[in-house]
Amino acid sequence: MKFAIVFGGASYEHEISIVSAIALKKVIKSELCFIFLSPERDFYAIDIGNMKSNYFAKGDYKKSPKLELTRNGFVKKSFFGSSKIEFDTVINLCHGADGEDGKLASIFEFFGIDFIGPRIEASVMSFNKIYTKQLANMGGLKFLRYVAVNKKDRQKVLTENIVFPIIVKPSRLGSSIGVSVVKNKDELEYALDVAFEFDDDILIEPFIEDVREFNLAGCFAKDFIFSVIEEPQKNEFLDFDKKYKDFSRTETVFKADISEELQDKIKEEFKKIYNLGFAGSLIRCDFFVIGNEICINEINPIPGSMANYLFEDFNSVINDLAENLPKVKKIGVEYKYINEIASAKGKAN
Image (cartoon, rainbow, N blue to C red; front, side):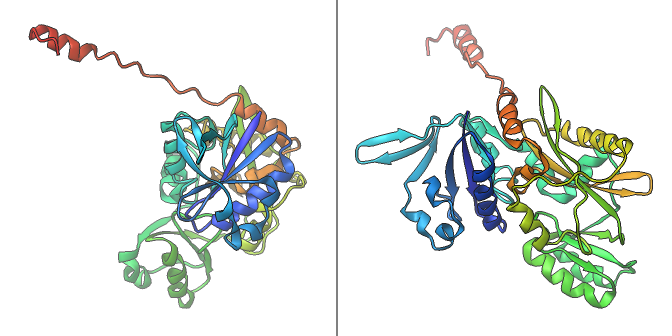
């Protein structure tokens, strides 16, 4: 199995995607090729020897061969014709916009390219945290109460009677970018400034001190494959610095010290959300445990470094998933209806 790792994209999480791709170079034992999606949305074939962060930061990627995406896959053109980039399956590793909002999923599906990653509907529902709450509600999962606020309603929020502490986060962004914990009204205006810098829609949720949080990754390939369940170490919440380190992690984490019963309950909640449209993806779900209740916090449809550090044998997992991707039903167009109309009118064409 040969994988093409597509990374980058026009996203606030562009650099994080680069770090993830470099990390996967170390953990996937199968043959790899790397395809970089620039902020200008051009595709480049990157030699594995150039998979270093400075290569992209300095713009040296522009010296690499530019690619076109067609029905035949990724094609490199030259004066002597065109040649196809050979691979079996794409791994969509573009975090945030382009990768997680459905743009790449749409293109891959349109051109009939096998890929690991969220399909269109799953991308839309997990990229927008407001939609994620609605999806969780539809699947019978519990979640924290929330208020969705559009930028035009900003002043209204400042005058409302809010119970603090709260957490303010952009609706369409990951990696804890733009997220603030607000402990009193004096801090609220600045937190709104930060969140609205990244998105016109934000969420406000209650901030629960010392809440236990657990991460579980997995996928479905004939049966469910689960990672270990991790209880991440954090300060107030999993901030950007902590998550950024996760994106470059390659060593397996320690399993959370919790009962088998709680592990099974978390896995059942994972199944509920995964079965709502995430076939073909390796996702990570973040859960809160509050008393006897398990609440879903977020869905990460393309987790940092594909959450490889949560699996004991990530290479086998990714290969099993690639061999069990959902099949796309082929639609046969016979023009039967048009021909029947033409025949009834006595016309040949």
